[in-house]
Length: 169
Image (cartoon, rainbow, N blue to C red; front, side, top):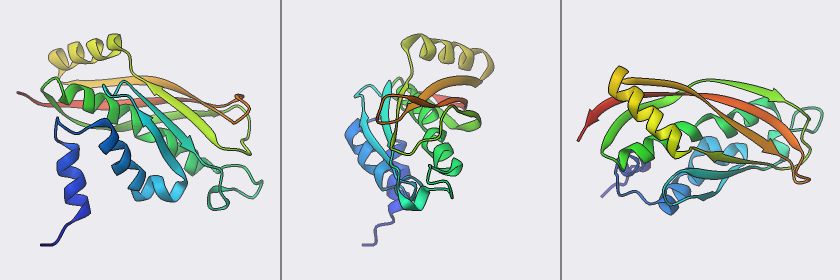
């Protein structure tokens, strides 16, 4: 038997019984996250929040010894669509999802790790479900801030989630 890790990840990811700790372990092994020093610290059991650390490493430094923009973008890119997809999947709503766009404002260069707390509220989920019922497509902006180890805000970001209705069970 040959185990294809990509097929395994995709099949588990589409399953409504995927647990939050299993998703955290799978995402921490994802090459784009692992290589950029992105670590998913925790995922709330209902997928309404994810804590992420972008580690300050030599391989994600720019020539000024701060974290380069590509690593910062990677650390905010996927989490809102992932959270929304998992929340909706548990409600029997299958979707196609990705990040359509992002706006990143560098407040202060970071010479340390950056921590993000991604949160999707119940009100946002109700709005998304309502939009999907009407338009079959949701495009919405979600905000997150990144803080260094001194709790100083270094990054303010907006992420546009693209969520398209696949089918309702």
